[in-house]
Amino acid sequence: VQLQASGGGLVQPGGSLRLSCTLSGSNLEYYAIGWFRQAPGKEREGVATISSRDGSKLNYADDVKGRFTISRDNSENTVYLQMNNLKPEDTAVYYCAAVWGIATMKKSFYDYWGQGTLVTVSS
Image (cartoon, rainbow, N blue to C red; front, side, top):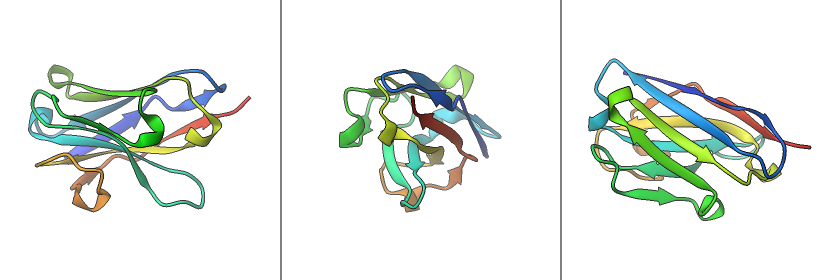
């Protein structure tokens, strides 16, 4: 199983980006997916998670609620993270991760990780 994260870039405060995470080597529908981020000098933290199969269970970190939306398209083997009203403190490398099981914000539970995509929010 491999994960490919993409969609990062430079955006002004208040702007939007959509990150994509594409899984290869297996069928996405069996995996719960989490988005994590790591800012310079900080630990990697959970941002959003989505349950496997129909993605009916969503979970967000408090500081992104109402601004970020996680979704999945199993037919495309891809999970998305729509990020709106971005703030400078959202600047980080964003990683997606997959687990055969229940979605969780605990990074140690995840089996597979993508390579990360850099999001920079700056004027």
